[in-house]
Image (cartoon, helix red, strand yellow):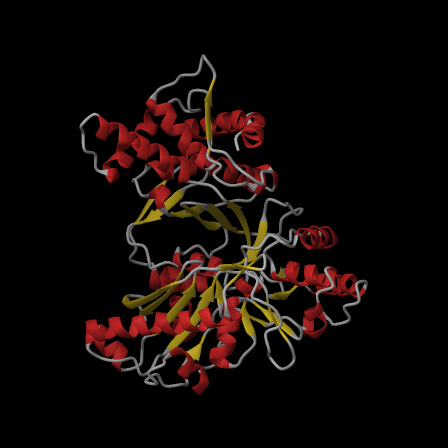
Length: 529
């Protein structure tokens, strides 16, 4: 069917994702073709030392995003949306939204951005022998217990942002397993919260006067493909202030942005993964088996269908690289030569492929902010070299591409070398890969694994969420991995860069210099204020 007919007949799927700065809605047909989009810009606020979004901002943002989608549908097709075949909501993971027995919010929404749970995260990680990052929901709850916060005695339910919105649209207190894995550890064999760890938590919490069982407070876990409820009359009115949208469409399990990112890059199958490299960088790998031990550098989450995923997240990636490219552009302009910025990136990135494999002994740190993997609460971008280093443009660019992935490689080496994790293909996306071949080759060198990019990418997380809604209604017994490969990405043009032996050895040599030079970065943080 043509787009207009799909929408008019109520056969479109809607995905809405709440990102940190933008709420975006994507409408697709059953083949995942984008029919229309809408968006709403928003920002978090620092209130009494807590990074938060108000409940009013959440509701207004949802409605404005959907109104913008309606506007675009009207402009493109001259019709309104009255029915949907399916929909789903996703959002940035983790955080803390706590409610009492009357479903009243007990405290301000605490987002993933807050770093106020160090004591709780450390204690839980030690007790569970499982890494619990500060941003996880259970860390927020346990820290509130340790702090003896007044609201704790009244907690009857807590959830994530996606779980909250889904609850308001459907009346169901459920969560997709990927998002749930950022609340509390998941047992991938059971596709549910880890039973022993819940018991351990209860024992710990009871020592501090908290008598409730955490199993009674968490949302129910669902996996991709399950029906998580239907859009209620109240939910339809909440979403569409015009009142044109009918209730009754199926709603899939709400997910986190990690799960929708995996879906949008076709990286939910075991031994695949995706790496997103832009201002920050993170890599996710779907595991064949559990890790031998827990590592503070590795976050454990799951795919939307429940397979275990190891994630390495770093705060810094391309910001310093971008600053250097900008400097070269300023030099060109000072010489009277106008330079197209895209061409500058291409020329400078490609120059890196002409460099010494190890970057010629140059050293750079791209730390605009702290980097937990290497133990920094603050950062200073710096460049250094020995007198005998091979200082030329090619090596300069190669080292800045290497260092953009330096902290990430330390985390990846734990997975690939210490844990022996095997990867068939990593899918790359983000600005680091915009120049053809170069970013892929550098990433392949860091991972010693093939790195693929897609010629036509989807619309990111909200598109992935809409695809999960379509999977719920369209798949006939297929796994999510097979559904994506057979129906969504089957015609996708993919470019793969295999790791080259010299590149891999060169990156390993650079990393030795990178690790040894961390004392330089420490001195920079201490002395450069």
